[in-house]
Length: 204
Image (cartoon, rainbow, N blue to C red; front, side, top):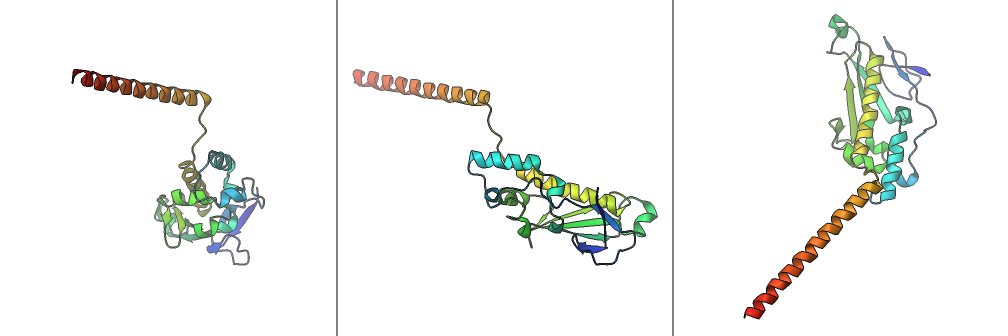
C-alpha cells in the first residue's frame, strides 16, 4: 500500500511543500480508476430510462474509495477540540476535507449524483462543495481516513437514493395481477352503473 506524507494545508497532488510537524499521511489512490463511469452516465442529470438505472447501479456497486481522484479534494489541518486531553491542544489533528463538486461533476462524478448530494448535511452551495471534518481520534492520519470514508459513503448514499433497482419477475407478476383485478373491478362497476341507469329509464 502506497503512503504519502502531506503538508499542513494543501491540494492532494502538491509534492513540493515542506512537511509540517506530525505530517498527515494518506493512502494514495490508484492512477487507474476501476469504476470509471461511462461518458453517457457522466453527463446524465437524471436517470430517465431503466437502462440508465442499471448502468448507475453497476457504477455504484464497483465504486471504491480509491476511485476518487486525489486532486478531487483538498485537505487542511487544525487543532482539535475533540477527545485526547491536552494532546488536542498541542497537535493539529483535526482534518477538514473539501471536495469541489463543480469540478467533479461530469469529470469523475456522474451528473445524476449532483442533485441528491445537495441534500447532504456536508453540502455547501457556494461554491458547490462537500465539506467534511473529522476530529474523532488523536492523530491526523486516522482522522483523514475517517473523512475520506465519509466522502465515499456520502457519494454512495446519494447515488443509491435515486437508483431504482430492477423489479423481479415475481414482483412484476404481482403488479400485473393487481392491475388486472383493478381493471376487472372498474369494468364491473361500469356494468352495475349502466344497469342502474337502464332500470331507471325503464321506470320512467
